[in-house]
Length: 182
Image (cartoon, rainbow, N blue to C red; front, side, top):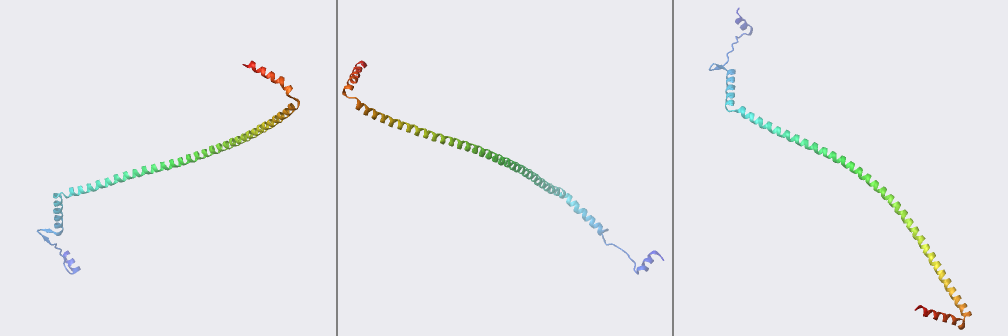
């Protein structure tokens, strides 16, 4: 048997494949031709250039957004560094303020101690001055009373022992002394 008969005998039918064709082109050829036409129209309508412009615009927008993001990041890093610097400065300022306050407190305490010692010394001196003044006043009063008592005693003694005859030579002598003064 021939080879064609063997195929028929095994399946019972003869397989003949005829693909449909139009103008001598089969379906895959028509699809290929249609694709060539579509690609040709796209090239003629400058679609690739239009797509390229659109993509270039998108790329430029993305670059601009990346540049803005980089600028924002740099600004944020600068703000962070500034904040850290201010924080460190604030900490050192606070430490300096505390140290200054402690130094001032020590100075005020020392001044208060000196002022208290000076006040005690002044008050003591004032008390001593008052005591000395009281002593002087008492001595002056005693002297005044003693002088008054001596004067009264002398007047009483003179009144008892002196008379008009004893006073005459004294008065004459005093009158004679008056003429020499001029």
